Length: 101
Figure (cartoon, rainbow, N blue to C red):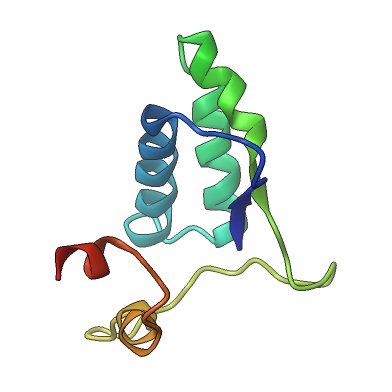
């Protein structure tokens, strides 16, 4: 799980840059979650703007346990990630799908 401390604020620019890199690595480069996370954080660290560099330390990757393996996510050809069903089942979750309704 990727998270940010509840006392931290992330700029929209850094969040977008992180998300683009992270999801690109997972879905187009078939990287593991751990590797995609490391690459996305490193992209923030290497950004030419210091304010974006400073955001890189705010992203955290939480693993279920220390033995958690970080293998690439494998989706079947037409399989969809489970999150749309989770959003429909929980009215307390506010996300892009919920906002659009």
